[in-house]
Every structure is written in structure tokens, then in C-alpha cells.
Image (cartoon, rainbow, N blue to C red; front, side, top):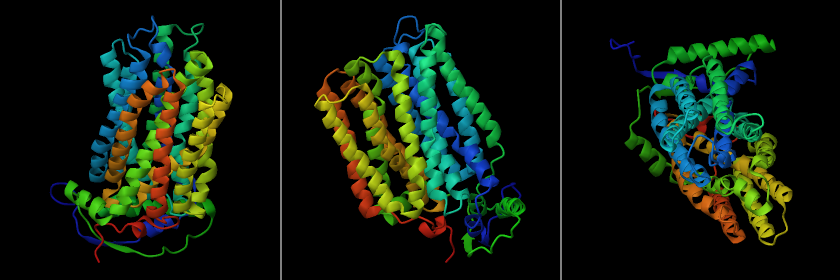
Length: 484
């Protein structure tokens, strides 16, 4: 340690990456998945609840003077703006100060902001704390995805990352069904039920915070930033636990790397790495995030309005339909995730993007011809999103594994922010007006915009996707700190 209390820096040779990658699946890994992955359930709950209770919030007696368009348009865009800002802010801090510190802080921000959202009595209060709720969730994307990829063995990384990101839709299912209960005025008054939905998010988040305290820091981050002894202790502890669990001695690690330790990497160095050293990978990241953001906004931000305006579904029942859509979304990563590790990243990323886009074009055609009712429209959406969900989850996997260790959290944050801002801020503002107009042609346009960008992203993946399956993170992208 230096006199300032910071660890002394030097040049170290370490087997930590190889030791982590050769570990068999164990209870230690389940602890990581549960502690870190469950936050996507909260995100799904947050996004879905607001969409489903929009009609109730806009009614007289809700306790909040806001219109449905303001909830699904302006307030949704403000939430996404907060998520983008939080991703960039906390992404930089995550690469600088470590994964664990930040995934505790970001969850705390979410908890406080969600609790204060439940207390909203004015539009400005609701919007301010929707921004900070998104701010915390956005920070989670950078801190959590980087930590997960650095702790999970290489042969499981694809499927685990996809399933964890796909768990968003378990939260969406819960939010959809919870909204049905909250909107039932025979159980809760108009001005109480929607507040309880936000309060439930606080309770779930607090439980996750308690579990997350036991998740270790990323040893990969630690040895680069001068904490090589701590990294050694974490990995050795995991190895002992796994050997006791399996009753077998672990094989020898496959190799080592020599690292020149440092405290932080500047923004200029990060930008040069992303756009000068890896321009094709940067193009891929942009394309995947923008494509999935527009496709999802084309469907999810307007699904309730379409069901109500075109199929005469009551606003209190839309949650049942969305629960079915969410279930299809979760099944995609769950059933297709393993193929990203076996068939390979490039064919699966390109395939899921292109197939989902083409299926949405087909859905738009059926809808335009008047061949669908509320049930068959929901089935079409569920099939589209079965493939799209696996593709969208692979976007997070992709940007978290194709750039060097020192830039990982910031890379995730940057592409998430740019793609989500393009699709998630402009998307709700564009699609809310199209799907709420009551004109079939307008909704068809919304579908076709999302489908076109999804197919285009899939084509980019055909040429630029990286064959990262089964490879160590250090092999996919050499750390900037490696001494050659």
C-alpha cells in the first residue's frame, strides 16, 4: 500500500482469468446470478407498470393530474433519459472504482427514487423521480453486465448473460399482472393502487440489496487496479468451495497474462480504443442497440393503446395480454441462449435480429388487412419478441465482451445510452402518437420502422459480429494494460 492508502501499482503476472474460466458451474456462480441478475426483474417491473397503469393515472381521482399521453410519451422519455445519463455516469465510475461499490450505489439510487415516485401528487414530482429511477437502473446495466461477464466461466457466458438480461421479462409479467390487481377499484381506491405497485418495487429492491452484499468484486478489475492480493483471495476461496462441493480437484489453469497495473483510463483513451482500434465492433454495438430499441418501442409503448383503440379491450385487462407477450420474451433467451455458446455468436445474433424483424413486417401486414383480433395480435407479438428478446439480450452480451477490460463498463454504458436514446427517447415520442391515433395505417408505420431497423442491425451482425463463444475475455479483446 502507498502512504495515501491506495494500493501500490506495479507489473504482475496472473493466472486469475484462466482460473475463473476453467471453473465448473457451482453454487458460487448461482450466488452471483441471483445477486446481480435479479435487478432486471425490477427494471421490467418498472417499465411495464407505468405503461399498464397509464390509463388509471390519467383518470380523475387518481391523485395525479397527468394525461395518458404524458405518461407513455413524455414521462417514458424522461425515464429513458435518466437511464442513459445514469449509464454514462455510473459506467465511468464503475471502471474507475470497481464493480461492487457501484452496483450497491446504483441499486440504492433506484430504491430511493422509486419510493419517492410512489408519493407523487404533481406531474413535475412524478417526472423528476422517474428520471432518477431510470438513472439508477441505467447505472445497473453498466455495473452488472461488466461484473457478470468477468465472473462467469467463458463456456457459459453467452447463455447466462442472455438469460439474466431476459429476466427483465419476468418483471414485466409481474408488472402486467400486478397492474390488473392495482387497477381493480373494488380492492384499492384509484389513488392508492398505482402507488402500491411502486412500493412493491422498493420491497423487492431492498431484498436484492441484502443478497447483493455477498457478491464479490470482479477479480479481473482488482488485479488491474493494484488489488492483486484481493483478487487472489477471491479466486482461491471460490476454488476451495467448488472443490469441496464437487469432491474433485480442479484442473490446472490454461495460461497467464502480465499486466501493468494502473488506477484509471481517461475518456480520450477509451474513445480511441472504441473507434480507432475497434471501429467495426463499435458499428456493431450501435446497430444492435438502435435496432432493438426501436423494435421494442414500436410494440411495448403502444401495445395498450392498440388493444384498447382497435380491439375494444378494457384498460383494466390489458395487463393479461402483456403478461402473455412478456412470457414469450422470457422464453426466447431461456430456450435460445445455449445456442449462442454452441452454434455461435454471429449466426445467432444475426438470425434472431433478422427473423424478428421479418416477423414484425408480417404482423404489420396481417394487422393492416384486418385479419387479427386481440388474441391473435398478442400471439404475433409474442412470437416476434421470442426471437427479438434473445437478440436484444445478445446486444448487451456483445458490447460487454468485445472491448478491452479497462473500457468494459464504459463501453456498455456508451452503447446502451446512444442506442437507447435514439430508440428510447425519440421512440416513445414517435410511437405514442402513432399508436394512440386510432388509425390503422399509423400503427403499421410504427411496426415497419421498428422492423426495418431490426433487420438492418441483423445484416450488420452478419459481417461484423465476433466469434466470442467459448473464448476468454482477454482473448477476445487484449486488455490495454497487458505488457507485451
